[in-house]
Image (tube, rainbow, N blue to C red; front, top):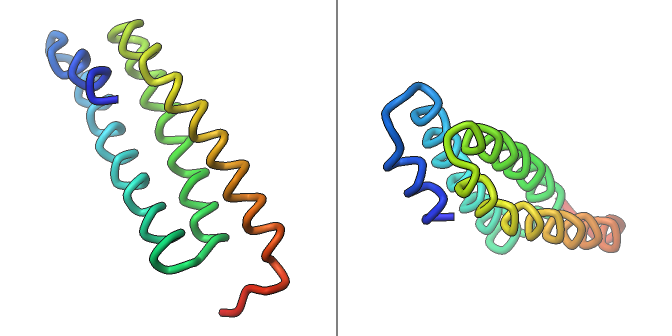
Length: 103
């Protein structure tokens, strides 16, 4: 992820570069929020919502990175795959515990 962002950061200045780096920073924040929501607050459904937001941010980031550098976009692909696995695990955790959740 960092190498992908570095390729974009080192690319010639453009509005796409700025947008890509903004979306990269936003997805990092959403990523940090997921850990806090899921592990610290134990809010599985809220964490699932955050994970969906995170996945969307990364996909937008990947699309913007692709306009700047194909390599930078390809380097984000394993992250997208991992997020899909995490989405499945988070959704399964919520589904299996939905009757035991107290608010």
